[in-house]
Length: 282
Image 1 (cartoon, rainbow, N blue to C red):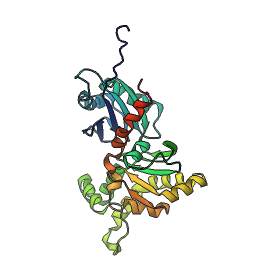
Image 2: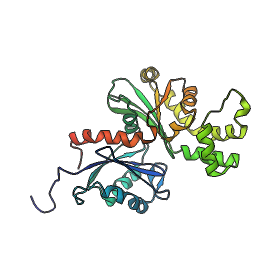
Image 3: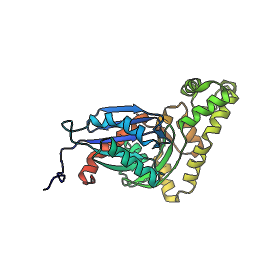
Image 4: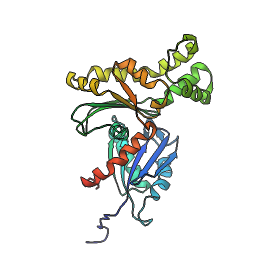
């Protein structure tokens, strides 16, 4: 075997979730690392490769075997990721220290991280509401059989509340954490009309995407989803009333994942042994 042709079987494997504000990295064991870079990320993809490399390098450096051998990386991307966005993700991770990169759909990782039985032969649906992307998909027999995404999420909610209610971004964050998307209360005046207007305006595109996704779904798959229910993940799942909001929208039982904020990276972490067993590392 000539120089440069060695294949290291003892490389560490790493799961990476590139969000809109935070980058989360999970090693094969339980350790979870985070880094934030507003200028590098937008709507769940990398927009500034240089800044992203700077944020990723120290995270991946800790995964090097003997401090030298680069790790394999399993990265997540939105289901509507473009070819250019996917290529930028891969090349950025390689520049940051990855030996090779496998990209998987974000909602599949979210479903696994939410402890859903994606191997089930019946349709299982997840809605992942992140900072800048809302992604929904139906899984069956460990495969994504239908998906769609819209590039909006919690950040749009925050901006809408801040602008409409004139409370600033920090004030909007506080109000969302307290009130969430609960637009109805025992006393209607408990939810100010401006706040209801702000939340409704920000949720329009998400409502349309989820409703259209379900409307266009084949009847048989739709029946399976109705029977199994919908699981919501991501930071949006932490907002008070989100599960009830989606349940009222869809007419289907909706539950929040146990650890919604880290569901994607934890799901990707759980997929590492499978990818290794299938020998998908290049």
